[in-house]
Amino acid sequence: EPEVTQTPSHQVTQMGQEVILRCVPISNHLYFYWYRQILGQKVEFLVSFYNNEISEKSEIFDDQFSVERPDGSNFTLKIRSTKLEDSAMYFCASRVGQGWHEQYFGPGTRLTVT
Amino acid sequence: AQSVTQLDSQVPVFEEAPVELRCNYSSSVSVYLFWYVQYPNQGLQLLLKYLSGSTLVESINGFEAEFNKSQTSFHLRKPSVHISDTAEYFCAVSPPGAGSYQLTFGKGTKLSVIP
View (cartoon, rainbow over the protein chains, first blue to last red):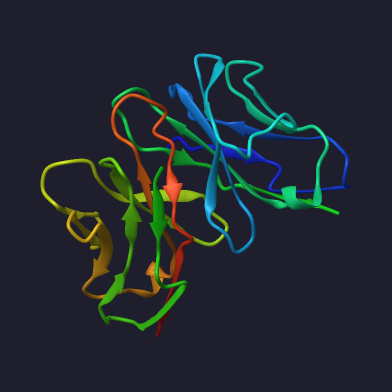
């Protein structure tokens, strides 16, 4: 069964460093998402991406965040200058297309900023 | 804007006993409703969804949820739980219609099934 994959499973970085979290969505899906979950808090929407551009983003998704689909398979989330409060589990998800409501989630990347 | 409240952060239950995981939502517009399950070290998996039609929806592994518009609830139930049901369960909503269908989640309920 096709699945969303994410790498790495755990990333440790120092405050101020740039990190790139990688996701490979399911191959025929058209909509892509990033969510995050700070320990003990809710899973929060960050951004959605369709047709090579951001379709919606939350207040959390400020200028230090960016997303990219550099080729036909990868979908990345870049955090330019990490802060301690960026420590969280980051989930990637994908969806087939318009009219299909199910989002398929990856296992997540745990980001620890020290 | 939507919000989701899961009233119980942890629910321990004995094997073969019934369980109900509660979910209430707040929204100024109609919403689609979802339950996702997360097993240890895995991603979120869709358990069941309510989009329209019958207010009672069922999953293939014996869970069911009932949409109650007047109480703005979407509680998840199972009449007899198994050890393998031990997981974290997330209730989520998304706005219908055109758009990205972004999900708004509750904080999750950890279900622990005791042998």
